[in-house]
Length: 275
Ligand code: KMH
Ligand code: ZN
Image (cartoon, rainbow, N blue to C red; front, side, top):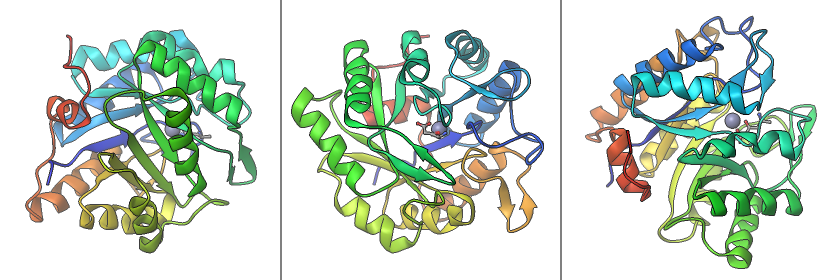
């Protein structure tokens, strides 16, 4: 079994500082957070950014500032979000790709998202996918519903591959979309094409069921305040690193070590890190 790749979704677009005081918001806070997470075993940082008042933005310059602060401190793989926040236009969401990140998220389908709709029709997906292909940015296919796997496979069939393998993130438990029951994780993993790599994350109360199922299946895990603000029911996490450290500890007890960022690059067949 490959070493464990822990992704930290440390910032997100929906979590607020009021709800979770440990949320990193400024570029410096994000840089320090990514370094702490890397120290406890994380190898990918899924990056959203915020304006100084905490509101989400996809502004390229705000991403550049956060990436610079991360890069001052750590070699962690940076995966920029193209999901952004509810209501953003496709052009807004695409901005961080201009910075040529190693990876970027790509949701392959529209999904209910709380009281809102996270809109990703075919034209949008295709534009995002082709832009990533052209720029050599590896997509992480974000799957909230089963049909989104088929949509991603169709993108590859119609446009060709965007790298030597497909990497997936099963995002389960968003209110309005597929829940994080273990059987749902198994169902989705069964549908991924041979040669794929995958990670999974459970939103809110689904955090631990999805984490434990992913570990049991030999997959990878995503944690972080974007997805879940609690350590235990009703007890806020101290921060992203505490959530990452717990998964690293459980995996170690099971005899599975965490991949360093460079080991994760090899597992994901990404280009070697160029300092
Ligand atoms: N904030 C959500 C609407 C992604 O990063 O690609 C979308 C999201 C997915 O967070
Ligand atoms: Zn995200």
